[in-house]
Length: 271
Image (tube, rainbow, N blue to C red):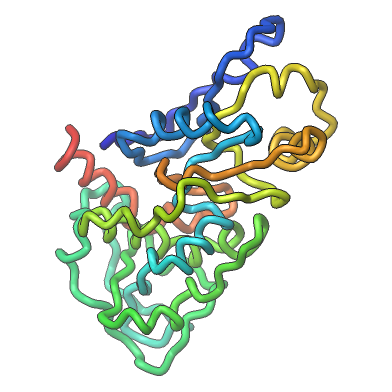
């Protein structure tokens, strides 16, 4: 496994004067985990499929794929630790977010709280470094913000940190249980004509360079405009797993204990 914290690599569009048809990888910041096979899988999926103008990783924490993962039973019920009703969020005093926390979900108690309360999205973080805990019954996932996920690039999985938070806790659980296969169905998932994140993609340089200039922002141009022009598709390599921590709309994630848990995984398993 490879853990990456805030690494930026820009390889495609690096030399506009070059006319060679080279492969390019575009990797944006804030990836915190990659599988050993992520990049090899991405490249070997792209090579035999010229009809796929863009091939993306199977990104943990991206609105479209979070909805897919939910319906593949890869996500689990987690809620923020509380001692009172969700509207008040009376909690234990927090610890600094830089503290190391065990990455393994079994090192924590189950969530306890009101049994008849449904947690909608649109609430604030309870304290700096607060933790989310697993509910004992998988059927209770309908009580959690995950039930509000949408197959929509600009939907709740992007705009609401509290919908995304259990997505990342679920990944750590699947990692602990060695069940990353829960994210992997067929090799390729077709996303066209929906806009897709270009945070971690493989492209041919000629597909980009031969059709410049871009007449819109790079993401919509690469995943909507260019595929429509070339009559090509955009796909996700379901076997190329990568964990993206947060978008700018998800600032509340930084007030959970997720980064300390991922840091603990790095120390325990990598460093």
